[in-house]
Every structure is written in structure tokens, then in C-alpha cells.
View 1 (tube, rainbow, N blue to C red):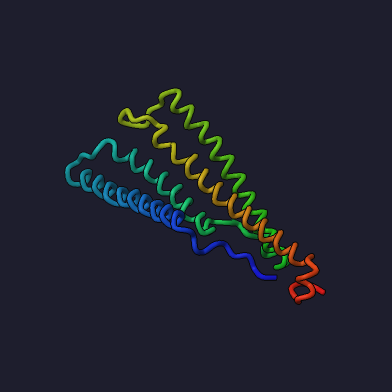
View 2 (cartoon, rainbow, N blue to C red; view 1 turned 30 degrees about the vertical axis):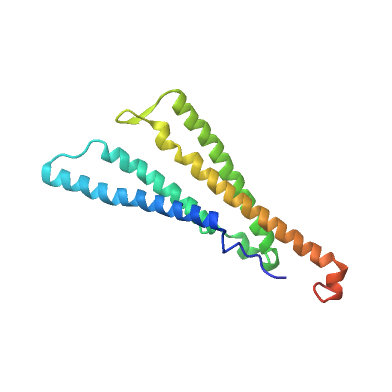
Length: 184
């Protein structure tokens, strides 16, 4: 049985979105790289700092972490605990991939939903983060990032399910058996 392979060549729209994600992530990281040493410099040499930089750096860390997770989910390069693939036979790898993709999509979808409710409450109750800026603006990355991860893994689970079904149909197809495409 041939092995399942994710699409390695995304379409033009997806390539553009991937590029946009990468640029956004680079800008966030660049802001952190500039602001953190600037704050250290101001504190060490002028005994003062910019009051809003420390809370902004914490927010940027959250955004970089979550957007990095979104980028990692693009090519299924997230951190995973993969004990089952070491125990189960190799022939079950495609089914295990389907189960883990569907599970990941479900969990990420639940986190997106509940964090979206949290952000809506923050907006409703007009919570502020720092310098009078509404907290929901900074927290909105949580449901967006987990929503994107859920969509990506949902699509991956769908593709794996379609692949498994096509392999199963190919095995049960008398024409493929006659041509040597399946077990005789």
C-alpha cells in the first residue's frame, strides 16, 4: 500500500497566506528583538525604562508562541507525543494519522471556541491590559491561532480519511485485482 503524503505543493492562495504568516511572525519577533534590548539599555544606562514595554513584551511572547504554533501546524511539525506509532504495527500508521489529526482538530477547535468566549467577555466587560488598551485586542490571537490550527488539522484529517477510503475502494475493486493493483 502506498504511503499517505500531505500536499507539499500548496496553491497560490495558500502560499500567499503562508508568506503573510511568516512576515507577521517575523515582524512580531523583530519587535521583541528591538524592544527588549532597548528596555535593558534604558534601565542600565539611564535608570529608567518605557513603562509599557514590559507588558507589551509579554503580549508579544504570547503572539509569537501562538503564531509559531500556527506555522508549525502548516507542515505538521508541532510537538507531539507519539508512543502509539512505536507500539502499533506500521500498517496502522495511516489510521493513527487520521485519529491524531482529528483529535488535534477537535481539541484545537474547543480551545478556539472557549477562548473566543473569553475574549468576548473581556470585550463585554471592557477589561484593559495596559495604557488603557482593551485586553481583548491582545487576547484575540488565542481563538484565531487555535481556530487556524483546528482548520488545518481538520483538513488534514479529511484528506487522510479520503486517502484511506480510496485505498480501501481500490482493494475491493475487481478491476484493480485483475490488473494486479490489490490482493488476489
